[in-house]
Length: 408
Image 1 (spheres, rainbow, N blue to C red):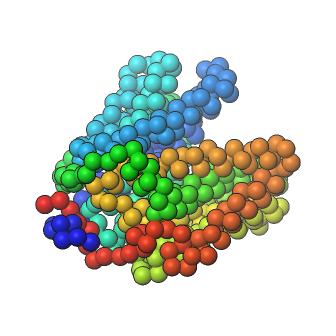
Image 2 (spheres, rainbow, N blue to C red):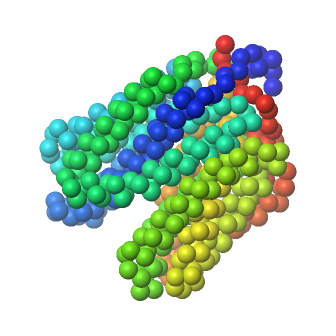
């Protein structure tokens, strides 16, 4: 690390970080609370399954397109204004649907929410990294991931209760108030972190950096984790129903998956800050995920529960460790761009995992679909474990340092 990068050290405090964790909760809660209730709303308004699918894709589509853009913007003007602007925009688009009282505005609201989340989600990740020393990156991302997991878990439950009590209007009112509250909290508590000086970057420089194993390996691991998580949430209830289980039992299995993922993330984050490095942990997470997918091939409750535990714990290990590795391998002045671009990998896994399992299930069986994704995940696990020191990641990703520098 150069003397220039060591010039000033920021000592993080809890009050600076918790608004960022709350921002992670907000994007996860907003995405899943609304998505889980769009089906009933669409059916009640006579919309087709095609329109429902398009509406569900709006949020994720906006994230895929815009996260790299806003990540780069946060490097240019600073992550804090992008964070605050995204939270305010999320609140405004949520409130617009409530005030319009028109079903057609739901399309604009979901597109706007996705675009706003594309701004404040990578900005929050960048700030989590910038406000923590290098030796605490894993722990910080583990805690951030924990709160996002809580949002993913609580979203459908709380969202369903709010829709039952007052319809989508009440749910969008809550998301608007939540985003405003978190935005105000961040404005008061998150310090100004000035953008770092950046050298000119050509397209070739960007391609070379994104083609480095320090970026590709963690991003591929994140894609594999998200693919397995989406398959677990989407297809395990079908396996449970096929085994004669009711919605309560299958819902409990999905909740168990979410709880395992939430609990594993802080623990894995702390472990990744040790000299053992992230490679072995990512390999372990991929192996557990592959085992969970293989367990889903087993009939009955034992297979369902083993799948939930394996997929949840495995993906919970991968996520914070991979993000910490990305942060360690990235120049601080390019953190926003890296975090935003890495999110594309996650979104592709989110879509690609269920698509792969669905195609194989349609051609052969759901059991074969689980097996196909388990095999691909196991191959990825082997590739990481064959490099015991770095797990296929850039050497920069496994170095630890007592400090992470901030601008003077």
